[in-house]
Image 1 (cartoon, rainbow, N blue to C red):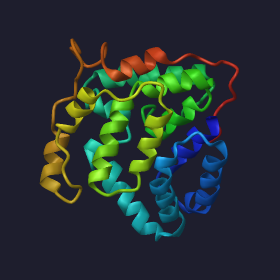
Image 2 (spheres, rainbow, N blue to C red):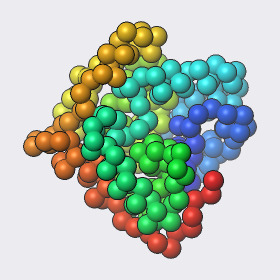
Image 3 (cartoon, rainbow, N blue to C red):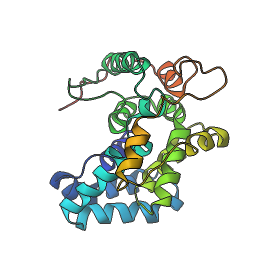
Image 4 (cartoon, rainbow, N blue to C red):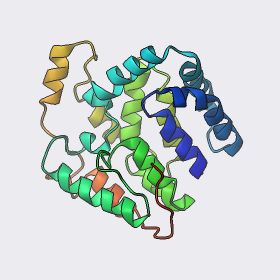
Length: 234
């Protein structure tokens, strides 16, 4: 499943000429691996067609509006758990250490909680452990998929695919809790400013500071090092 995770990781990266040229190959890899259910393919194919044929500047603008300017759609996992709290810094350090123990070298400019990087890490892990770890933030994937569905975005399919691959499925109450948080339109600057000023998100019984019982704490706890894995290529 490592090729499937790498392919999904690529689809969530900032659109470039290289990604546009590789869109066809990404689709071929996903089709050959046969890990994804049939119901995600129509929208996933739509996304790959958009990436392969769309105007690059339009694709880049859409990506920024969705994932960079909209906090509720952030691709940084810790944003949905720690917000801007102090816990986020230590969580970053811990997650980076997990990557390095697995032989995945993270550049200084990269944030460890960036979902494409997280998927790249999981692609180095044994299948069972990758699926189990992928299941830990499944409710975050569920909330992101629902928000993208509301926006009629083909990116929804990537998160539906991640849920399908996860060993644990999203719990409705946890997804609902995330969906109750502000989800402003990227063109509403006032609403966006207000959303970025919100308190850090905590959830789950006894979550306290959002770390010990938070979803990313469970993600880190579910990771296992793989020292024999090769270093990540830049």
